[in-house]
Length: 233
Image: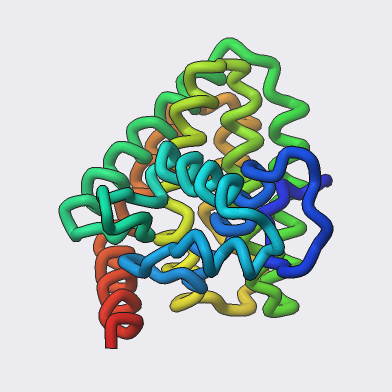
């Protein structure tokens, strides 16, 4: 299975022609992994020097991330990494749960054998990376698991909306995973949803999906808040 690439932050690479999008991916990787923690300033001059770019493409990259909800801009103060309140996280998780439920609903009239086969492969990949303690590759495989379902809906509307919501959720999900990552061989939720989809029990698959996301909310708030306080010291 070709994993979705959750870009690593690498400095000093040759810049491609689509420089703003390349830079947006690199900065996004740093935001997800808390190299640029919530509330921190993203100074164009410093980022330009870090990546060997000019300020114009950096500014465009930050605007791209602003549209994705990862960055905020204040006139005369510049760009900062978006910091979420507990209320923001509640809205984000509840919205994501409902949208993931919509993803399941959109699969009802689809041939899902190729999807379930891909999900089973993703589960095995996640188990392998979990055993090896490789959080980066596990995280990428986890994101890929959910993206496989989104792509299988063949809905441009769901893909667009979920891209936005998932972009906003990734730093929180990474913080939660980092706090709780273990070398467990299996993650029951992913296996359960795969089995439900294979049986075309969409009602159960939807229930599992929404309940899993909502169940993570309290822990996500606790972990995110603790990580935020740590970085503010």
